Length: 292
Image 1 (cartoon, rainbow, N blue to C red):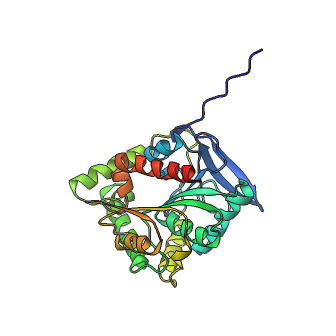
Image 2 (cartoon, helix red, strand yellow):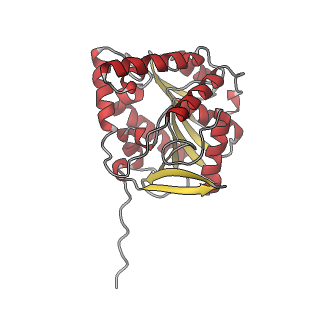
Image 3 (cartoon, one colour):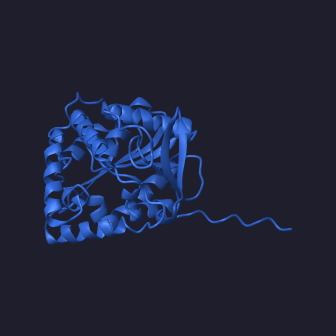
């Protein structure tokens, strides 16, 4: 008998199987796809987001050549427990999931918004774990005006309710014609997965995350010079949630980092410019593997 031909890897996020694992009694929900490799790309998601909130155009582009893992923080989606009160604790929980749950010693990170804040804390606490880092739509601990995210978020939620829209259309995109089209297209892409969809975040969990971001913004700055991993930073030029100047601040403080600022776009610039950004992010992460 001949040797069976191995099944090709799943490279579509819409078809990535839903999985769980347990660490110290805590159950983490996650998905993985793409070719198997020793050092995967772990994705850290934004405020109020579950596994279903990643743009499949970004995931799929990276999963063509890299092994991708997405996961729900504790207290979110299909993961158990409660959302931690601080992003430091969220970083600690992520470390347990990655090292003790998945058994990984080295990872690349792709992060967006709150996920980028958690990723910074994780990288500073465990620099040996992170080989390369993508920080999008995010800012540093103690970043100026980051604590205003609470008012911006609740205000845009009200606007979304009044217009029967998804809040992300207001929070992530400019309200001109270009931004409105990009927002609706992004929300439609999030619906492409039709099986094993995640549970939406609860109100208490959402409020706890929002307070944790506010606390992060009001904290003493971190020593970002401790981040020596190759870092790609991206944002729009009109981010109302995490001010765009904070991406420039990250760039100045993380030695050797690369910065992309997309024009006429807001917090969700990487989704508005996904056709341009996805291949850049994939190439950066592939370069990290090549450099290693």
